[in-house]
Length: 69
Image (cartoon, rainbow, N blue to C red; front, top):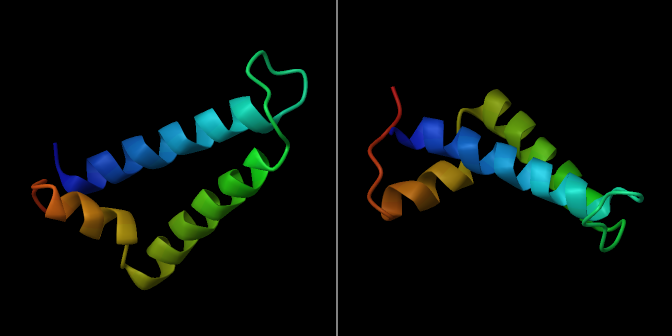
């Protein structure tokens, strides 16, 4: 798996988890502030698309994942 594929998996997982934890009436609701994390992940995806630089990709490369195509 390339680092870009893993970035997408991590981002998607973060978004789904934070929605489950932040949306009232969700079975796993904890606090609405988890929706701020959803916004943070979305902002980072937008920034990555505009600048072609992604912090999560850099972190995953340090863990040994190969660069994305």
